[in-house]
Length: 234
Image: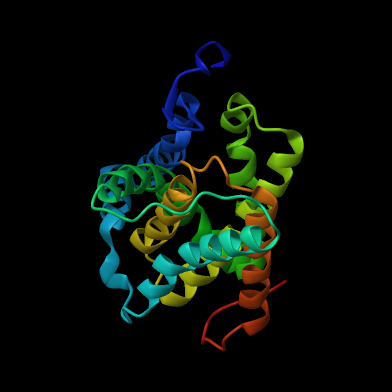
């Protein structure tokens, strides 16, 4: 892949990011081995299992947490004296970009949420599952990040944010009805907010984003709303 790293799908996104579909492919293969085509169809149907979320207010959390992190990051960076361009007004042009990110996120979440989260959560609990999957999720992106010429420090802070976001996503996923569609929406919003941050994410600061995401994750861990049948082993 090193020979093709100059080719970018989007600014800061090398072509190796197409590997995002490998978690879904792996999950589909594993389901086929255990349940044949019925298992494959069951997993594919999870792509649009939005009806699992009975209380639609949960979608506000899945949709708005990442924009809130981005707005806070922008405000903190501005308050610290960093010169940032004014955000561009949102237009309908973001919808094709969102669709692209949603499809790419689905390529991951069919594996991370649709296959791996449930058995891990039943055995270890929500927080350990979020941390474990968050670490794997972060490492999974190391090659594209290195090919995008990110420094080790940049990757370390980004990894903190990524692990924190996976903890949040796992918490929301378990509490809201275990919807792969909802998890994919959350994942797509991560990438959309990055690309909309000035300019095409070029001013994105993984240290600020990572620390804010970590604080959000800490809140979710501390709150621990009492839910019947849910495990919070830490």
